[in-house]
Image: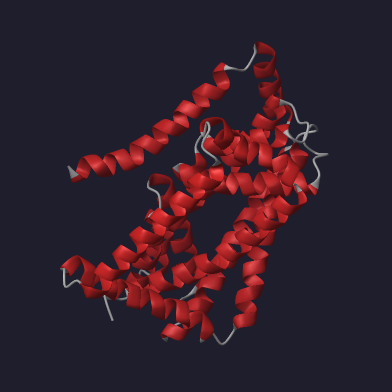
Length: 335
């Protein structure tokens, strides 16, 4: 049963992504298909390569930032070990959602002699910082472009909710989540079940990792790299808009709105297959871009960034072994 569930976790999101690709392309007219192919052929690839370059810079900065969260644990990993494990983590996420969050600390702990649970905690600390930035960007774009985005975000909910108000649905969902959360934490704190004991041990390690930010000697550098990472994320989106004449005049608010919707789309399917280009297309339609032009940009953005992750991630596997060829591998499952 477990292998079947593991298979479905991978297969169902990918099947959903493939369905979306078919669903979008089946409704394109011959003229729109021709315009789509023309957009790919006429794209200015200078801007696409510049977008990829910004993406690489963001990943390098992420590798450096990770070192600052690890320092309070008593050891500073080498840059290449940090960078290669970050890229392997990204390519692992393409295979299975959130697999990269396990792969990163596992590989770095193996080569740097650091415990997995504490390294995992530093990744959680990173995610907290990133979520604050993404949440701030989302709040800002919603305030600036609320009239535009409410049609995209809430239109389908209003259609599907019938006579039941969205407010009631959200209140009931909130009550259910609070109740389930309270029950879970009660069981977690009281139960002697081996599974719950392991969860408590993992949470203690995560807590130490999160606290490592407070103990960080170079908080300024951590915050600087956090800002730089997100500037590069938006920058790689923005410059790619110039690769097509039709999208080169989209305002910055439209670029950021597309970035937000694309970031959310990746949550639903590993790598954003099918969902990401569709989210970009639906957002840009609100800014007057044609369906074919918006879809073309969505696929250009998705393809360029995904290929960059695959190439660097796959190359990082032998390179990680090469840079550690003379290092004695330590076992690091706890502590």
